[in-house]
Length: 362
Ligand code: NAD
Ligand code: GLY
Image (tube, rainbow, N blue to C red; front, side, top):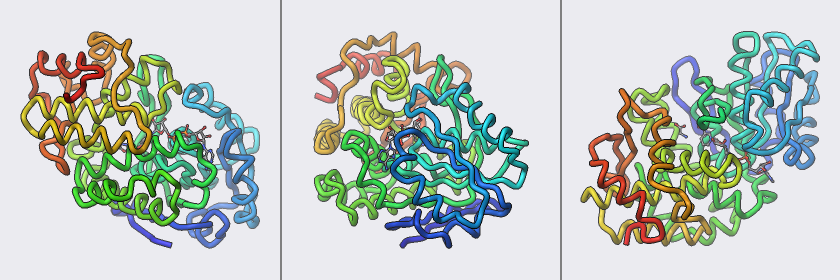
């Protein structure tokens, strides 16, 4: 097992990465202060892993709330089901919430923990690759609003992240690929040696190899923890973690939540960001082409939906959280392995990227 730390002074916490971790009670007990525990999971993950987790928590009074599965349920109505369960089971301020699921469950459980009785403890047990490499770390919690993704939420850090690689074996291939998009992101924004490793190991990773998965989770969490430690509330550098996300969120919102997976939209969005970076002279066209090739090896989409117009993109991108004084800011690459948040691009150049479609980068 590997242990990393997210270094945030008195809110620092460990990330445990390894096999069969949810069956290890010793990983949980130091992070549960009271007697009550509420596990939050969904209809897909609970039948697979809830019993295993509960057997590690036999010394506590454990309740569970099982939510419907899907991005389309990541909203205030579903969030309320968590509060209903907590109140009807009389959970008090010493309760600990445990998120057992992917990013949707993790984001909603974290947000519920931030609000319930003005804040209770929570532990992340991420069960998708995407949630192990990204969403469970860093304390961003939220639900969607019909007008924009993750628009209602809070920064609220977990007490621990327990990333059990063994549970990834039941993840559908499309979901594994979606997680790989966020893994590629770290290579692009801050880690050229990780990017090279991915270029060598992509097929192994996409074939659920346990060692490759453990390496990818560890290297991703190291990069993410380092960025979050510098800028917890995204006043500056943390925004680079959103490479491709402004384009990607526009795709997710336009297509309807859940139609394109978040990681798929991020993959196409990263190609769009790379294309714009090339048009601005920051990277070569070959590097855009190589990125597309790498994403294709992970069976990820590399171009946006054909039916999305430039104005569809621009309208949706205007509600992005990075918009400042009405000005769109994007995460772009200054080179492979380095990113910047900037509004320094001409609208005409952005429009070329938005209308490139199938021709992106070529
Ligand atoms: P998800 O939570 O919807 O999970 C994907 C699917 O896999 C679901 O159907 C789920 O039930 C299923 N699943 C989960 N674990 C499984 C397992 N071990 N075996 C079989 N099936 C399993 O999606 P996701 O990709 O994990 O997360 C996407 C969400 O994360 C989005 O809402 C996105 O906005 C959010 N996100 C948040 C952050 C953050 O910093 N908080 C970062 C990135 C993404
Ligand atoms: N996923 C982007 C962030 O955590 O900041």
